[in-house]
Length: 212
Image (cartoon, rainbow, N blue to C red; front, side, top):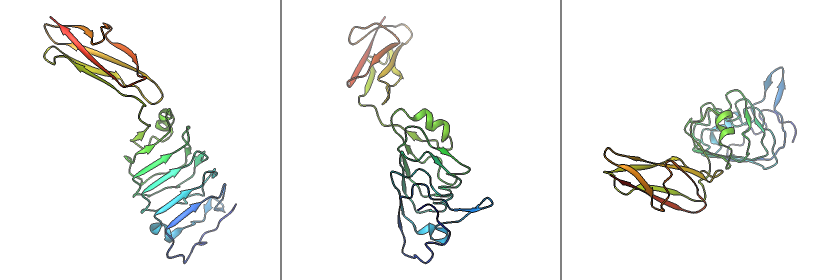
């Protein structure tokens, strides 16, 4: 399908699930206008699945699909046009599979809650934070391993993670801060660096020790 006109699904009163696999279908009506594909049916659609070879979506294709709860945007999508998901106010999470965030057009996601979690590939946060700044909850996968730090005695000092490891960077930075009358002595493994950089290639725990 290369071109699709308005009203093509008119009368499909039981339509609730859509699988869209047209690679570059257009709904251009000329002179800056476009056809609404689903129009009055939008609010009854509960599932909109995009095929893995789709490169572009028609303008405003999912506008007013208020009952969509989840959406996956495959890696093949390079850009999203005007009003693609405008007023999809029921979206609870979006999976974006491209490592580089697709460019978005005018009001592509307006009406979608700004705190909707956007789940992205590892190492992609900078791209999505820049291009999809409308959203405030962009989530990378958790790292493979975790790090924890503790103080041996909170009356003597505290310990914290200054820079956590991420799914794309194993390095973490930890530090200890002594309280009045005490100084930092060492970490539990005998290392005296403070702050300290560590590579988190397994689950790690560090305890900070202090002395008078």
